[in-house]
Image (tube, rainbow, N blue to C red; front, side):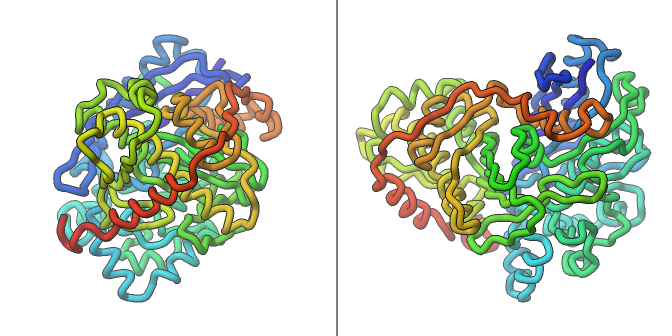
Length: 495
């Protein structure tokens, strides 16, 4: 018997079957299209996400059989805003993705109104196009026909977890868990409920929002006529980065992890303490238990890491697959002075500059594709260090080690660079799919497969620990100089 975990990521949907030992025994994956209608805009079609979900889950069912699945856990790209028809479930427009920068000028408008400190104190999040709040405000002002459909009840609105659950249950359930809701910038972190003052600021009617539920516990069942004949309890929900923290069994205060996906996301468990950052980090709900107890985390969100490797493949054409990056980068000993700042969607933590743009500096006639590939890996490691440095200062505690997962964690050169740059061990588990595993763990707790979190600790086995080696500190100083030159590149209101 196994739990079905659905990981609806930014570029595709992964489905896993996870057994009682926490092992992945079946896997399916399906990509969907990335739409870029204007520079800085990123959109996803909800219908394509649903079809990718059906394809990924169908692959798992074909391997182990529907009768061997006991429950569903869902994890997802977080701040993306989706709109879908209440009856047909089709999308009247494409969703606005977390990477999208179209609300940059709205953010400036809100900052100039003097409300940023109030918003940060209530939500743990500074004003940035990253979060769902300004995406909803943009919809209300710029897509009035769709917004009228939302406010009249014809259309439903929510994050990707809400959309998938609505489709799976044939519209019977409209919910979001506390971890996803905390990323909308509309939830009061202290109370765990939608905040009336925030809703007024961002002009969002409360009645259009989903019910906020705990991260585990049954919220409904999939409808077999909509979902491949499956009638299973939906019992675990979490945003992808919080699910990865849970999947790393990082249950103790001070536990931290970095997931290398489209972006890189570093989370630090602060327990029941709601700690606001003074250095550009986010405070987020990691998970909420059925009794209402909330575990919080500090988070650093780096927007472009794996996406930078994807750009090397699709934009520059210097590699044919992401797997080639390590070999190409290893063919040279250094970047030969080349520095790549992958601010392809602006800069996230700790800079929060939506007007930054990517830059490759230090190019000479001797620069090769290998130097750029190596600079790309260094940029990923340096961006993570930027966040970790802020975490150390915020918590006043050194980092003992960093647990890692995600697709790029398979890259041994990158992981060694990361250990060298951070000067602490980097620990990689046998499974890199801890996001989906975390969703399965939550669903298993929600259905009694495991009676408590301690039973999950033994499920993680270590593949390799990367020990830090000496590295020239000047390279990090040069990185910081390059970041400064990439900032405030775009004219406000322009591209």
